[in-house]
Image (cartoon, rainbow, N blue to C red; front, top):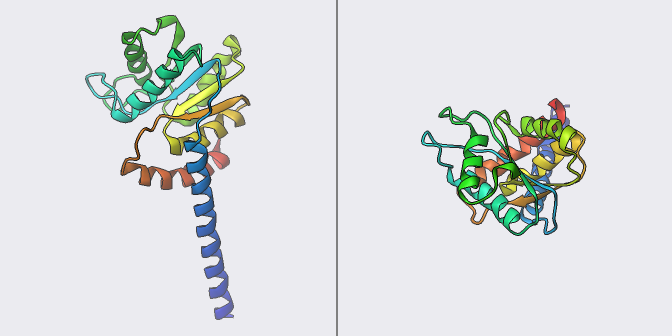
Length: 192
């Protein structure tokens, strides 16, 4: 009886490891294969903003990628979403100020300062979309975050969302983020 139980536990453990590897491989594949088409709006997922309102390197990469999409006329509007930030600086406002300094008209940028996580960004985007009626969107975030971002936006009712990675290089912190995404994805599947 004890041997049979140990075999079942071992089999379950290997199955979980295999699922983790497959899921993580898919997340990396999905995140590193950027959408090359156009959409009406880019959705920037927030990240750290410093006390002086400057963007962290991770957030700057996301905003620069959305700016590139805008300059290439692949999107018409930019939805910059983030939370209040660790230093009390609203991420949405900081992203908007950064984009305005780079000649994006203020009327083409929507700042959302209530997007404290991916779920709230998706929820805020869909609430806004009730009045703006966007038909397509490109989520701009780190490669490991694209699958979950697209998943929650679609789950909340906006089906035509693609992803573009902001990552130009692989950073050491990305290993932790890739692992974290496995658990975060299933948390979003169960709780949101």
